[in-house]
Length: 264
Ligand code: F6R
Image (cartoon, rainbow, N blue to C red; front, top):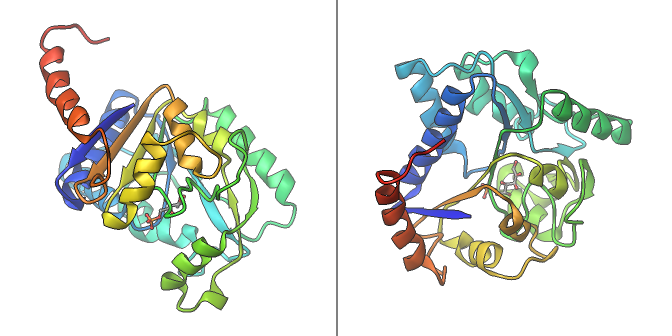
């Protein structure tokens, strides 16, 4: 696990976009796992800028989104389909046939979830999974108590998540009570995970996730077991981290070490 602390949301977003751009430059047909919500908005904006200014090429990239509310039509302004088009896809040269987002109206949910997992396998798995963290410690919509080995499936949302998301839907009653989400196990299969956290309201949960015990009560905590995890947090979100100075020390020495060793 590597932890980078940036001074604010803008710097966190720039750094995250650079990591994703590097992945695409190295492997133009990369498979990206994508998240929605507030946290990755700045990262998408930066990537759009890189496409427009530097010609960062998305034409061979494939994407799989983490989750979608259920039931919700893709035309609903709060659906994650709508979000992805509006905030990212329509601004870049990605092939729409290569963008997989969970169908929020599918009837045969089990068959759909099996198909989603199969499609991920068919393209060789996810190279880089972008993640935000929920206030209850969720990744995707894997709420507290979700199996740490779970695969894509339908979940009943936690009362706290419904309350949290009411800000987007206007009132609590309009927030869907269910979501289809990649499982914790699906996320853990990604070759590289990039977890972003911004703002003081994430500081306690981020500390639990990366420095606390691994528990299904904070599903993000399983990321401690991931073989290649990068956490990028801003100052506010890193406020409660106990090992903050150590992470900063490592960052400094990592750069120095690069001048001494040969990287693959
Ligand atoms: C969204 C997702 C969620 C969010 C999390 C944080 O696709 O999977 O786990 O990443 O709820 O949301 P924000 O970024 O809005 O605080």
